[in-house]
Length: 142
Image: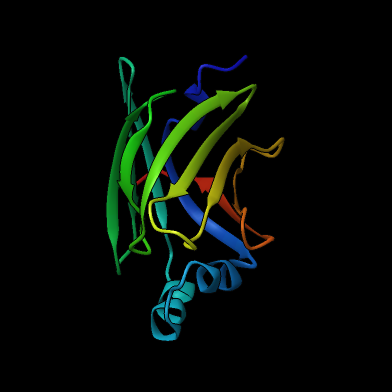
């Protein structure tokens, strides 16, 4: 069972699969999707005690999420949805469930895991849309 330390540090987006379709399912407009598909994105993970902080950044948009493992919290997603979120560690994976506060909006699960080659794989599953996207990050020194 992991304590999550493997996710700590700075990660740079290397590649994506099916990302445009996932953003479309989330209701992201065409112009914003085109911009987002061209950007390099970063994830910076820190932890102080039981408080986790994820700073997602790009030249277009940034966001900071703070949470405690296993405690539900309110989150405004990068695409503007308001969700109830819960992050847990399941084995060596970090599982982030985002439940919509509005009927019919995207219900998603975001799973992070470190692959054998050292990359961070972030898998986005649109639970109510039957869609999966993957984003691969490499360890990066800012």
